[in-house]
Amino acid sequence: MHYAVVERWSRGRSFLHRRDARAKAGALLILLTAIGTAPGLPAALGGAYFAYLILGFAMARVPVTGALARAAAVLPFSLAFAAIAAISGDPARAIALAGKSYLSALAVLLLVATTPLPKLLRGFEGIGVPRFLLMVGQFLYRYLFVIAGQAASMRLAALCRGGFAKSGPAHGTRFRAAAGALAVLFARSYGAAENIHRSMLSRGFEGHFHLLRSPRFGPADWTFLVSSAAVTVAVRGI
Image (cartoon, rainbow, N blue to C red; front, side):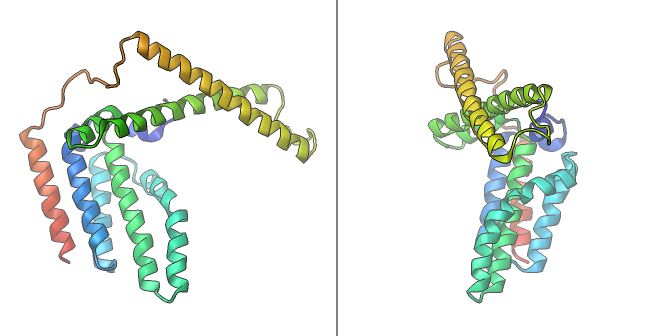
């Protein structure tokens, strides 16, 4: 897990990290609703929400430049739809699509970067999200690390054997070798995932992840939720 940057961010000790996941999820839902229902995206509204989120990252002591770069991962998808809107003669809608998607990604990243995954999923469960969906998300997230670990191990083994040398075999041979390595990667990952599942069952796993301490929704969490909603609505009125 040492290579998961966002995972490390979520283990901080700032004011936002200490807030209950249900409060942060509620604030995120209100913010996403306000962004999504805004008629277009005026520069003043977009700038205000952008500054609001940047302030949140600063309060959480999360590297702002790193957060901005990671939120940009949604742009290749949103820009495709924005390009369609621009070609159809609606450039304002194209700008709004790209801007809203980026702001939404930034807001979701702020939640994930300030809440460890077990607490985040428990918070979603507390606001009524089906447990089955949360369990699928938990396993998917964890098994991605299993695949990444297996890939790192295979890459190190290939480097030790000169597998990435530029003076090696021809392009077609390297492609076939990479395809074979990909098949081996998934086979090894599947085997590791089965071992993990058997280990969980042997330790009494019953389909529910337990926290060491039950979350408590305190006065500070209520204050955070109400104040965040008030700021979101006030900015929405710009």
